[in-house]
Image (cartoon, rainbow, N blue to C red; front, side, top):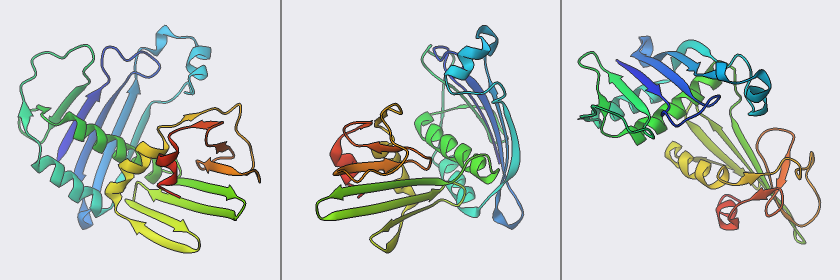
Length: 232
């Protein structure tokens, strides 16, 4: 159906620079078969310590195959139908490389931002489907004199589901609300040195991103309060 080739811009340094190739095809039962390859670039210019200090490992290259549900197939078809070719003889230093091949002449898309969003999300779905990463889970807790309110947000990239549990109620959100969630909650600055390993009883708003750390809004987690309160 489509082959996607992507490479970070010339300004992206190691160990962050990488090249990605993703083959996507309609499979039996209307699922979306994937073949993903990721290769990190120019790491031979760094020491092992420098790579590890940036939060990477020494073996981050990937080759993964499998299939995703029909929802991903339909989303891909929609994106392809909305994509036009543009002339791109030469890239600027700050531009990423995109090359899409649907079986005709490979081309640079006129809507690279949409392809970046799609590729980032399907990449996360593939990592989840392969068991390399867990589904998204964020817990927000507000401690006040009136008591404690807790909201748990669970999202599966592989299944494209987004569920909010609040005060004993469970609500499914539209999958396209994910970007707002990520923009609001993951735009904050995290300070692990000030984070706690358990939820405090002191008045405040706390967030847990699925690991052992709790971050307090305004202290170990810096963000606009209204962005966080919107999800409580």
